[in-house]
Amino acid sequence: MIDYHIHTKLCGHAFGEMEDFVQHAVRVGLQEIGFSDHLPMIKWANPEYAMAFEQLPEYIQEVHRLQQAYPHFSLKLGIEADYYSHNEEQALSDLLSQYPFDYVYGSVHFVNGWAIDDARNFQRWEESDIDQIYEQYFTQLQYAASSDLFDIISHTDLVKKFGHRPSKEMTPLIEETIRVYKQHGMVVEINSSGLRKPVNEIYPAPHIIQLLKEYDVPIVFGSDAHKPEEVGQDFEYLRTLVKDCGYKELVILAQREIVNTYPL
Image 1 (cartoon, helix red, strand yellow):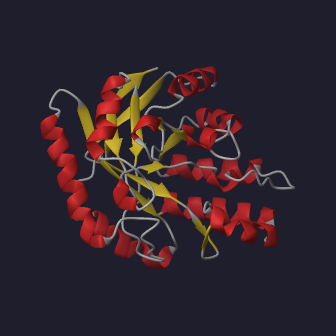
Image 2: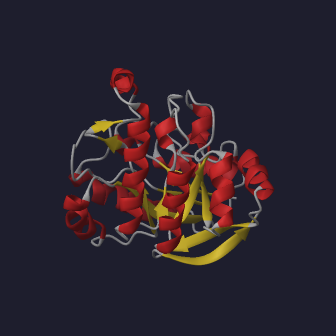
């Protein structure tokens, strides 16, 4: 099994040494992992959300050291980058192009300038139009995919993290978003961390995975681990669920290309 979504303490909200994550992955029998910590933020920089610019070389150097220290274990260099708006696309492209990433996750965490997944912003949810937040969130995902800056879209329905649900049917908007994914060659992550959040549901929800399969969008698995023991967590559940939706394989990435598949 493969886990492409693993964070490090450099992001300010994860715990443990990077080698601890690798050792846990080996112990639980994973075949491959990738670190994908939060890229320094082009906008709304916050040391509790992402590493600082001066830490990025340190992060890359440590991944390379671990690759050499564990030569018989497949370890990839990834990154998770936030998408904000068209205005930051060039700056983000310039930053990403400087480093030899195997894959780049595209994420949307901010809507209307505030982090929708930060529990400290819970009151903002209470004061907001939930339908409008959902619409803006999925529209941002479409912009992210259309930017061609990313290889993988992470936690596609993160907007539900705290259990807020829209009052109207969002399937047409979600299907439109998936069509954009397909058009721009996106891989989509099936992320188990939602099972550890208030919503208690994986990202994306099973009905969205079914839509992804209908559009033949390739997938990867990610634990979104912020502690070593979370690496690969609940992957057997993910495997069963995606196989029930018709998936037979995950994709493997290197040098920002799909280079192989892994049978489920």
